[in-house]
Length: 488
Image (cartoon, rainbow, N blue to C red; front, side, top):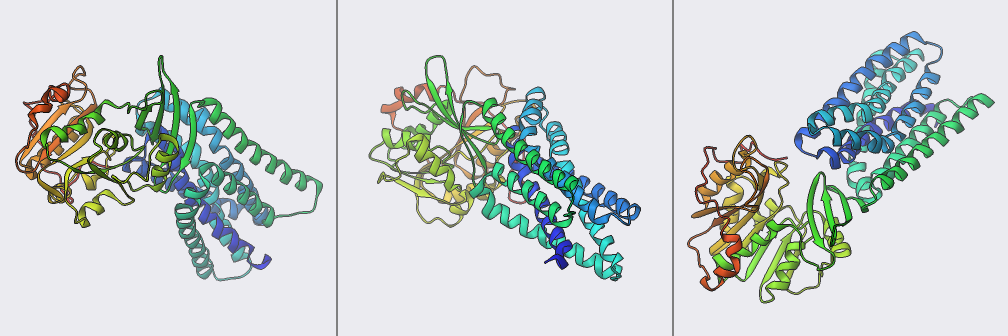
């Protein structure tokens, strides 16, 4: 085993680098989101830091010919401690900076650099130092460099898949950070284990610091967020369940990334988000509607409302994240055994593509502002939705956008796209008192064929119908799978 200790170190360094990249997205997501832009920043910053680390590692290797193994061991120990700082920095730095500045791009750049740049830089020094050590043992430079680079890349591949498919959904980010820190400590000790009191003391102190920082980070998180009752990592998201005490009522909320996905009044059981009531308009525009589909379950607050109010109707819910469905059952009271409820764990677009069942109404609630899965915004997606509808069927979509101004692109793109697919399109403003240039919940409705209005229910739904924007227009082009300027 000792014969291959450099190879083992290089392999695990590559694996841990990619694990840190995936962890970075999870740590930052509640504060800056997880859009493509944020992912681009994380990847770019870490690549910059790694590039500097490769250069610096090469310099160190050339200057310290006699202490390469000791240098490598020291860098791994320091990177273990730097990794252990991540849970602490999340609270004292990332959380604080995100509250000071509303510029998410700037916050993401600074936080990614400070929190993840240092361990990425240190881990990158491993490869050039390992190459120099191997070259000193008289191996050919080209073969040595190729072998070390290959092992590092194979480790990165392993780390990516192992973290993404196994560790994150089963262990959670904090446990992974602790495990990564300890593994780096083990590698440091494994590389250089000089039998001296000074070195032994250094090893023990390093472990104490690593464990202490991880425990401190957990303590600070819950002290700083007393309203969070569950912090869960699923295959797709970091999910927070909070219990918030209002002036008169207690609310339970579900947050994914920076977005509040669902919340209920714990005292009455009623759903808290006003926009959800607009989905009830299917009952007005198509009085014969019996079967509904909802894309995006989150805490399942609307499906539970639907099943309670329309006991003679059915609803299928497509939710890609099975952990979300489990949380809805455990924390929000979802009854998975209701005979009128169908649960489908699948991507929303994939379901629309291959589904053969016809629905009277389709509700789309998968968007988080401009952080939308673009594949559900396009002309092709809406054609699939149109084909999944019965005659006189209706699609109702919640969109966060302004009506006018710089933040109005989303609703305008979608309005043009819906107009190209549906026979009639309507737009509603959820909060009639909000300014037109303010980002807000807007409801977009597409109707297949003709409306089949239930005039007897006009009075019941008038408080919703009165908020229609009858003069809405758009100068934006149609969104397609080939051209989708909105999305995550």
